[in-house]
Image (cartoon, rainbow over all chains, first blue to last red; front, side, top):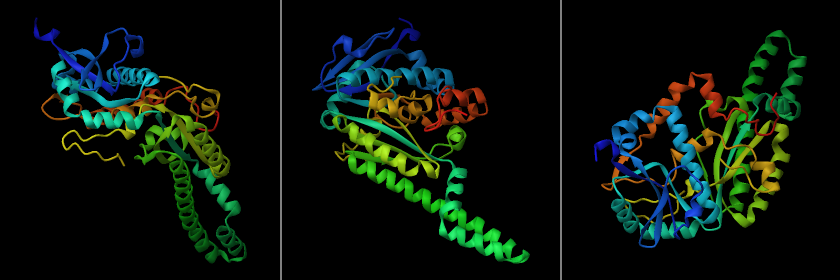
Length: 275
Length: 77
């Protein structure tokens, strides 16, 4: 066999029970599982040509390639998730051979078993909160007593003082908006967190990617018990009713495989929950 | 990509999971492996660098936002 037909092993995730062939969904390539002391890795043979370090680095700058592979990664995990609790791997997780995958599963068996048990009956939901700053400003200028006070002072003021007050008002409005946004996001995150098993706050995404929706003010993930998902949506309804008039909007996605709630530390083998 | 399954979920989770949402998870979260069993590790920074280079292309940005995706709570203008 020449070098180009050499295979590596790509791991999508780990499950606790051996999947039936039908569980892995319909894909135009062969997905199978490898067993290592009580857990099973969902794997695919991939070409070394594509996934060896040097060529992988190049591929990762090719958006079309990344998009296809990433959609596949997610799609397969979503299929598996329908049937059983799955610990998703980051993209891409590449092993030299099947033996190494099995070795890895065995080394990490306690961590994976614990994680699979923990994720059973739960799913991840994502929340991105946006603020339409203009709408918020308008709402505050209409309501906030501190701003109305300055407005009435400006109405009575002479030219010089009015100029000074206008500047003061701009600063005041900015500060109030910051305070309000912080209060809304804190309230939203806390109400949802209290209801969930686990939650985390992630980085706000770059403006260039989200400008269409307004300013992103919160990027969070929640691990919810499947049977309690109705309650989760009720809280979202409540938050929507409370904050829409302030220019706040809630973008909810899910259910996701539990990417945000399954970090294990293979090197140190910590048993701690992710933050 | 799947859409949410039941009616209640459709009120909230029916929008297509955009590529951006997927990238946000798949590249940055999930189990990370390292050590001598691993042949290679993706350099996530490389991907974001590639993304930034692509951002100058409006077409890519639209693709990342999922094209037909409507705003979180509003219908498209």
